[in-house]
Length: 306
Image 1 (cartoon, rainbow, N blue to C red):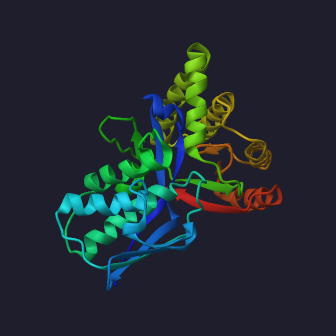
Image 2 (spheres, one colour; image 1 turned 60 degrees about the vertical axis):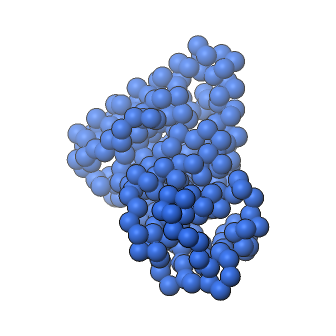
């Protein structure tokens, strides 16, 4: 039996605007992950993924099922003949929460299959296959989830441009607070697109403002300017609210974090649920975490961005 995994991710800045060619910043979150175990089977390719209530032979899945597409694309890429397999997928990444659960499954699967068959596939190849599965999950994805997870490092991402990494001059603490509300990114992205098409001047302006915020945030991270970084997070949240992708639950958690010492806070991911993130200094981690839980967060994860 072999085991492979892939971390979750958060978008620090730029969600939704990234779909329109604006930059975004995303980082891996190692505290949550998808794990895949693969062993020789007796017949067909059997998949158990209890987190999505899946227990079935690959052949019975629809052609548009993301897991089926990833597995078949792997065999298509490598020209390896299919052999009987038993695949188990488990995850600590909440589904539809903005933490990249779908992309993590794809990447973990591809890493596991390459280990099982003792064949090397590159991060670029993993990324490309995972992106095709993301299209099934999200309709018109930016590609940022699969990219940051496949390459396992912070990225400054612009759609269809060469991957760019950057230096974190001063490590900083992020709290990820889960509203407990699942929200489909595909729906939120579609709704924002409808707004932009209906009134490109107004909503296009918010998209452009987010892009400018992201560029400034990159410089703050590279210069270790955390106070300014927190302010930019709050500005990014204002723009996202105007794009209608916040929610009362997210707003409550964001306000709570700011009231109790966070330097900045915003939603992360598609919005309308999922997670908010808060930039905090080390001395306020415990206090802000406790207050977020009191305010209704179902879980709070602390991660250090380095």
